[in-house]
Length: 313
Image (cartoon, rainbow, N blue to C red; front, side, top):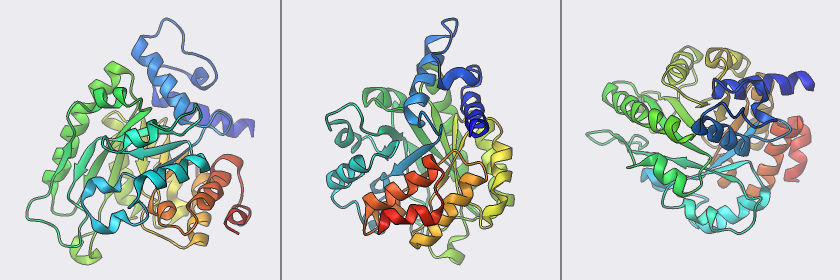
């Protein structure tokens, strides 16, 4: 267990480069600048103090103007309350909905991860022009909302290099502001399958495509990577390897059966993932709180999929 914690500490230390492996247990030295100290402090709020992993529940889907994405979060306030009671490490929201979380009283609610970009790339029939646009003053808005992290996409869509260019411009604008104000930056590399083949938003789980895009996210300055699972989960260590010192949180993707999502999560953690960012597999579940607790058991307690499934009984 000590070895697992040390590896996790190394991953998170790398996320801030200069902090060293002590950042999770001790305040950064006073010789570091205030922004670096604040980045460490926010990472400490985001990652679990014992497992050093993170379970972030994404319910920012309303940002993308897709009716199907609203299933399970039609009543956003109720969804947030349900998740807060289940106690994941973080909830991912937009500028318009983040106040719902932050208005809840108490010191122990999940941390806020703030979505900073809006896109129109998810429909079954794509519009004539695709875009990925960042909100104005994203870090300033994140600070006002007491976010622990901001997240931005890095799309790779067949035949749409202009969208990738927009994403890179967003990241290049966001990175210096994150460093200036001590805000951790989560980059979300997403490889899409051709829309004509997949019939709508479908990720490509080819490890040979995921690895270079993840590496590009690292090179652009990510403090955290949020990446797709590979089709063959046993290959996920290659994604972890290419991210190097940067912790990788794995996306849930489309809705899957309970047994599949629990087994996949167990395998991803075993492959070295430092946590998960799931959305539809929780909010569209018949028992969102139970599924949250089941996944928490795998991520933080080292439970097997079979053991975790007891939370769904």
